Each structure stands twice: as C-alpha cells, then as structure tokens.
Amino acid sequence: MLASQLAVVLHQRKFSSRIFTLNRPEKHNALNLDMVRNITPQLQAWNESDLCKVIIIKGTGSKAFCAGGDVREVIELAEREKRQYPQRNQSLNALKFFKEEYQLNHLIATLDKPFVAFMNGITMGGGVGLSVHAPFRVATENTVFAMPETQIGFFPDVGGSFFLPRMDGEIGTYLALTGAYLNGYDVFQSGIATHYVPSERLDNLEERLSELESDDYEVINSAIEDFVGDPVNRSYFISGETRKSIDRIFSHNTFENIISALEKENTSWAVETKNKILQMSPTSLKVTLSLMRKGRKLGIADCFQMEYRLAQKFLEKSDFVEGVTARLINKTSPKWNPPSLEEISDKDIEEFYLKSPVLSSLNLLNPRSYERYPFAQFALPSEEEVKKVVTGENRDVGSLALTKPEVLDFFLKDRNGKIGVREKILEILARKTRTLGGSDSLQWDS
Image 1 (cartoon, rainbow, N blue to C red):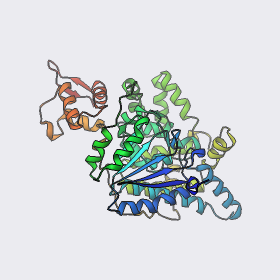
Image 2: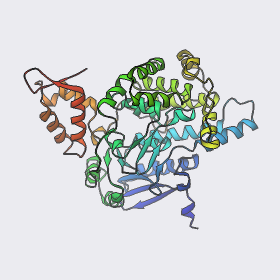
Image 3: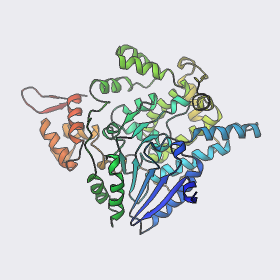
Image 4: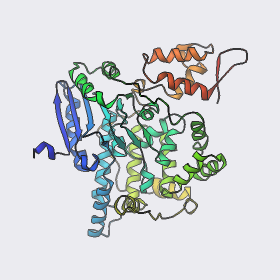
C-alpha cells in the first residue's frame, strides 16, 4: 500500500491550485486531531504562497465530504484520561481537539487566498466547520447537511454560533435545535452553499480552477458559475407555510415558549418537530438557544471564544459523554441528566456554562474578525437584502416602491442571472410582501 493511501489528509499541487483531500472514507472522513494538525500548517503555508491562487478542500469518495468531528474518539480519549487522572474535572487531551479545530475553522474564515469547499456527500458538524466559513461552498445532489449536536448532548460548535443566527429568519435556530437535515438544492437555497454543481462536473471544475492564473474572487466565482447545474427538483423544503411557522415559533427566547408555540400550531409538522426536540438533551437545547441569541451580536472571533468556553464546560459536566456513548457506541437511547427541560433553568445554564471560570481561553492564529461574512455576494440574496430593496433602504433602488418584476429584475442583474435567484426572490416576495392598494407596488410585511 502506498504511503499516501495511509495519510488521513492528502495534499496536492495542481498548477495554480492547492488541494486537500480528507482521506478517512471508512469513517466517512470524520475529522480527528491528526487531520486538523495535518491541514493547519499546510493551509498557512499555501495562504502565503505567491504560486497558489486557490485552495480546494474535498473528501475521498461521494458518500461524505466530512461527517463531523470524530467525537467517539474524543470521548474515548476523555474517558481514558479520567481513569488515569481522576482528580481532573475535564480532559486536557480531549480539549486539545476542540482548541485546534476551532483555530483551523477561524483560519479558514479569515484566509487571504480564495478557498473552495466541495461539499459532496455528508457534511455535518466538523465538516461544516471546514466548509461553511469559506467564500465558495459547492453543494451537489449528494450533499446532506446537518448540525445534529443536540442529539449527542453537545452544542452546534465550529462557528455555529456565528453562521446559524445569520441565516434567513429563524432557519438557523431551527436547524440548531432540531438537527434537521437539508439535502442537495436545499443546502444551496438556504445560503449554506454558494453554488449548486452536479457531482459529475466536480472533476472538470477542479481542473478549471487549477488552470486559473488569478486569485481574484470574482474570477473564481465566474469559473464556478460555468459549472452550475439546474436540478430536476427545484422545490425548497423550508419555504411557504413551513417557513412562516419556523420564524413564528423559533423566534421565542425561552424553550418553554417554543414548546408552547409548537403545541398551538396543531399541524403534523409541528407535532413531529416537538417530538424530535424532546428526544434531545435538555441541557444541550437550552445552551444552544442561548448560543443562538448571543452569537447574533458577536463577531466571528468572539463566537469561537464563546464556543471554546462551552467546550470546556461540556467536558466538565454535561450530557456529552452519555450522548456519544449511547447513540454512537452502544446504539441505545441516552439517559439525559436532567431528563426534562423543566428540571433545568435558564439561570442555571447561564451561571455554569456561560459565566463560571474556565481553565483557558482560545488563542486564535490571527486577530481578524468581522460581524458579517465578507463574501456574501457569491451566494443567493438573503432575505435581509430583499427587504432593503423592497423598503427602499438600499440606496441603489431609490425611494419609489417597486413592483415584483422590478425587484426580481434588480436581483437577477445584481447576481448576473445566477441560477436559483428567481425561485428564492419569488418565494420571499410571496411570503413577506403584499401589494399596495390600487397598484402593483410592494409593501414589506413586518
């Protein structure tokens, strides 16, 4: 067997591109500390290289880009250290994984070089951290996205406290609490991916990117756009009445109110959603909701600092060990402690997980931060962008109320006819606007 076949991450230089290939197919390319330590120094070197114009990350095979952090390995390490050093209240070796993983995630979010993630296959947890902060994120028909951490007694980390609250409406809160899956085109429509490319075109896209002699972001974007596809099914799961329900229910700031709102909804979707939530760790649910609300107001560097604090507290006391052991190792139902939402107060969560002292803070690899992703223009328009055009807050459209065709025309020109723009704009306008009396001009419904 070749040595390269044993490497957990493969490195490749191809003309002007530099390529990482996650290489643990038997583990669905789950991320471990060896992989993080393999990627980080090389990524720093390529970021400084004048010969490198674009960096690509992908996974071996089409089953998974990266199915998450290898939390089973983390827990086994933590339990082994606990037996060796029973006086410690948390595993220092397990904590190293989260520290170095978050450092890598932040590095990806703040690179100088264009970074392209091929999210072909399962993209969850740690795999999201390797992709979602990139300026270019390519979904395919094989993409399956989720942040299922509350199912294993953890919380949506890897920068989840930054990107999830910045999704349209309350979609991010819904995904964080329920661990709901998005597939293929939905990943693109939701803004998690910037482009949708059929998997059969990825090899050719890689070749095109490798031939480019420019690291200009617009050039990279144009090259990817040449390979985008039009899926057979262009319907979006989180739209229409379901989306209205998500925004209405998950806008509440306490879990008691969220559960109450689900019960009042009285639909099959609401019943299914409530039942799913109540299977999650109550501690994780309450921590996650707090995380979503706090993350909205923080820059990306502070979000990673907050998550590192939480990782330390979860290794000290939480349902994390129980969740991973039960769900991933023993394949049984976990026994949460406390077992219900009623038995843990928001004050308890705040005091222990977010205010009490921790052993260390996170030293990021560079000091950069921002409050909004700097390359959002390469994705589909956000709902906030549409609102500003309809209400006249966008200075490029003037103060006169626009009609539906005028709004649509504005965004088609703004995104150069990008596939998916029409569907997204029309869905937002149908759900969030109405016509003014006696005219076709639109008014935004608050």
